[in-house]
Image 1 (cartoon, rainbow, N blue to C red):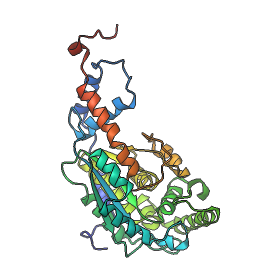
Image 2 (image 1 turned 90 degrees about the vertical axis):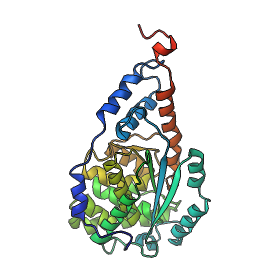
Image 3 (image 1 turned 90 degrees about the horizontal axis):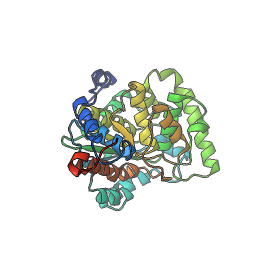
Length: 340
């Protein structure tokens, strides 16, 4: 890969040593205003939590979602050649073209949410290695993919939605989760693009074999990523870190995106404090993953598309949280009696 300057895992680990926290002043202002609005305390449920979260991580009060940004990272996986998907690996490149031409679901949802959609290709003609035979990536290529993801986080955005495209990436996601959280391969393997029982059985066996093969090398989460991940998952990890350094709130999509985020959580237990999860995928491993990283999804719509579609669907909810927080009158302004 040659998209970015060389990077190393040591440089990535160095960034983790000084991650900024939330802006307590902005968060406190949100809490104070929420108590004055014309409603019973907690009546807007998670919308209240989201307004506070946005204020704290945007570092401003009131919070606003005026420039949402959607980043979809695309990469190919060598494991796809083993028949773990209902679609050939060529579909990754074809879908990237569909994104560019405006024909995918995420294009329609991004337009509806008035979000800026960008698609980032990561060496689609150079898939990762079959991770049942060798580590998926060399450290340099993996670190460069992380750096590439970091470069996608532009200045001035007030919300970052992350997603991916890559045939075979639910196999990679399941292998990462098995390595991080244990259990059985069957706990983490799902039907992905809609595979039949025979392919699911093959997929599960390959996941188990891959994790067993690389177990001695997986001394930390970055090694898990290198051995079992993909370029697009590495880029998502990089984007999550860059957003944290820029104090930009992040919305995560489904299972594959969640597996990349789980690596950040494994590196730093507070590494996802600036993130929310948009939805719970029907992939069976996603619910288990969310429990392990302590995240509660905003939506549960039986989706499993990827491409940041679920993340973009959360944008109107976040806009609603901002609108209610900023636009509602206080008890004093409305002349309404407060709680006795």
